[in-house]
Image 1: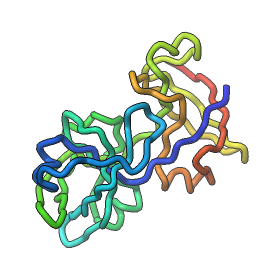
Image 2: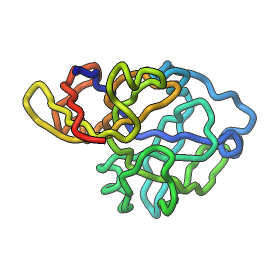
Image 3: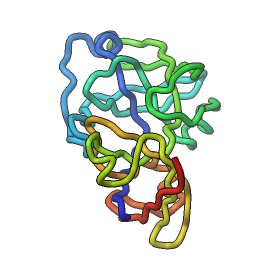
Image 4: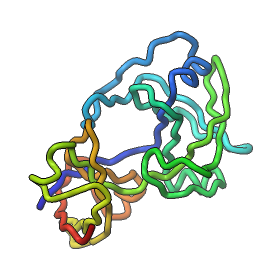
Length: 186
């Protein structure tokens, strides 16, 4: 089976309350829609601080969430000198904290992770695709590189492989590439 590649850069998901600390009552504005239905890259960015190091202009992904989550790259972890757990979105127990900074506000948030590779499957298409929550799949690139990922079934899912920018570079993948997917186990 074939699946399209979607590459993710560093970004943050915020609660409405955290957003208001950082931006006041300003609306969260859509810069461009993402493939995952209802999600968007916003116009707004924050600086991520850890110790004496800062990563500037990290994009906020909307809409608002029930909890804050900061998704960084492996190269970001090296730059900041922070140990990042590789986790599924929402698995935020015992994760590090960083400061988020704007011209208006600053706050400390935990929930800092490096997102694990995953294949999004839309709810209702699991049987059709033969892929279910937490299935393990083998991905094979056009150059023959192989790696493993898992399946994430979601209501707003768009069928695609999500991989971060650093990992995509490692496997020489670009947004929109097509890779081969094979179910390995449940």
